[in-house]
Amino acid sequence: MKRICWLIILGGILIAGAGCTRHSVSSSSRPPASSSNRSQSAATAPSSPKPYKALGQWYQPLPDARGFKQTGIASWYGEDFHGKKTSSGEIYDMYAESAAHKTLPLGTIVRVRNLDNNREMEVRINDRGPFVTGRIIDLSHACASKLGVLGPGTAPVELVAVGTTALAASSGAGSADFYYRGNFTIQVGAFSDRSNAEKLKIKLDKSYQNAHIQSYDNGREIFFRVRVTKCSSLEQAVQNEKTLASGGYDGAFAVAE
Image (cartoon, rainbow, N blue to C red; front, side, top):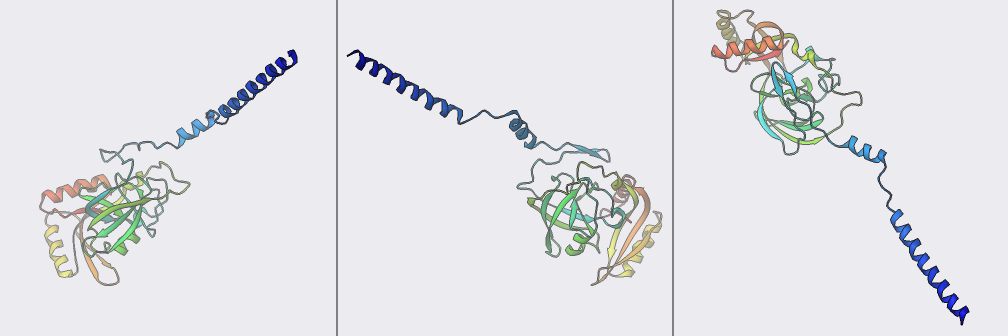
């Protein structure tokens, strides 16, 4: 009888021990997150882009481009900036399909549609600008050519954000101060008829310095662009642009030569 009692007690102990073992395995199957995992998670968390200052004005880049849509005037920039550093840290290539925007996240892909001719293409934002009144995007030479903006210099466009892409591995928060220095002038008009360009030049000669005509052949037609003044910085060009606007030339805009 004693032997039977001891067997019952021993069996109960073994069953209880087995229950404790299952509970222990269950709790250890979900180990706590390591410090390295926590730091990795923090490192990949998105951060708000820092504001920046250009020509005395502060700009706050958007944290996300989803749903972005904008209509306004596009311009383009080319040879004077070719081979120099952009705001993203990449080297500007005027023959690549890229563009500058003041607030879209760098790396954003936007669909640009020229509202004058309905041409459209997708462009990657890798630079900041244009810091000129009334313009919303600066296209590379290649993009301006495809969209039909090279000749007139500007065009009304619609921008729609369609995605994002990584910037080059070497890119960072590089400075693009080159963008503010160089050879600038003010374009007042663009004509397919040279006689109209000559008339405007004669009129501008009476009030402004260095009025000149620059011809541009886009392969289909020749444009005669009327420009005035010579500036060594974008800031100076913007001031001259405002002077021309107050003098009745509302469509005048700064360009690099």
